[in-house]
Image (cartoon, rainbow, N blue to C red; front, top):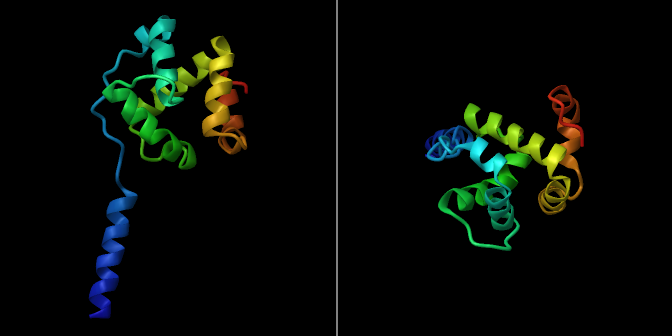
Length: 126
């Protein structure tokens, strides 16, 4: 009986460890969002809990804490690349919005410290 429970437990851990975020919204046009302050602000307000959220905004808001904690280990390649594009845009062009997001989701700078060198290679300097 104990061996059965151990096998079941290990199997469940394996399933949970391999879960990925939904790719349902991977086809979002990031260029359109980056080019539009109105659209970008809507997403910012959503994740900062200052405004209404679209379904993809809700998914983003739900996953941000875990994605930062796990360095996006559950992200698809599209999500990783998109996150970097948005991050780079915010750092370089909308610093005040980036600072607000960082204050909420990375207040101790743990994510930034872990990834500082990698991001610097991509021109993202915090």
